[in-house]
Image (tube, rainbow, N blue to C red):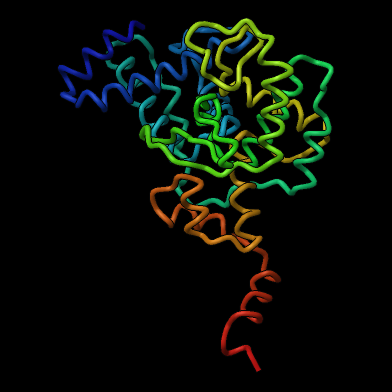
Amino acid sequence: MNLKHYKTFLQLEKSLSKHTIEAYLHDVRLLENYSELKENSQNIETFSAKEIHQFLVYLTELGLSVTSQARIISGLKAYYRFLLLENIIKQSPMDLIDAPKLGRKLPDTLSLQEIENLMARIDYSKPEGHRNRAIIETLYGCGLRVSELTELKLSNLFFEEGFIRVIGKGNKERLVPIGTIAQEQISIYLEHDRNHLNVAKHAENIVFLNRRGGKISRVMIFLMIKKLAESSGLRKTISPHTFRHSFATHLIEGGADLRAVQDMLGHESITTTEIYTHLDRRYLRETITLYHPRNKG
């Protein structure tokens, strides 16, 4: 189905705003891109409910939040309703798809040992070995979103000051502290791997590149992490976002100030950061025993 036809329908018959129309079109393109990644690519007009479900599993593995998935499902329901209206399909596969419940689900995290086990499976004999180690160290050491990592620029590395400049959601910039281990691994990657690549045009300032010298993709990072998880015997389902969750959880469990973690993660609201305070009961008991005035004898 030509998306121009669908866009015209949204403009003229639904009278939607430009921003809303672009969001609807983005959802359809996302499904099309997923179809192209499959071994047996097919027209999304022929998708069944089972294939839509597999697409949603793919989104989860990429680290998309429940809220983002719910919005995409809403956009796809609108698209398939349009196909029904145009008599292009006889039944919508979205009829059997429910939107995920919007709750504050506690994110999965990894222990430090699990993270080290993952990194121990990296094959440094391969050209991308040092790059992959640097990627994981940066995701975990700085708590970046995967999109922030793929957009990270050489000109935004301020190692002497111990910070990197990150472009987050809404094109907002923030400074994030970077530890010595992440700095070391990025420096090793830059010296031993990136400096020997034939860098593609427009990627000269990008830190993490693929083997062809272009900007590394979100999907490539996800696949790399999934492969490491499998080879290390990790049974958890993880994504690049898992390292961000682990970064925040380990900081808070270690006693870090919630506002400081909020700033480092780039959260607009403190309530978003509070989801990471799922500390074990023993830790909470120890905290109240140590610090609450009614528990001091």
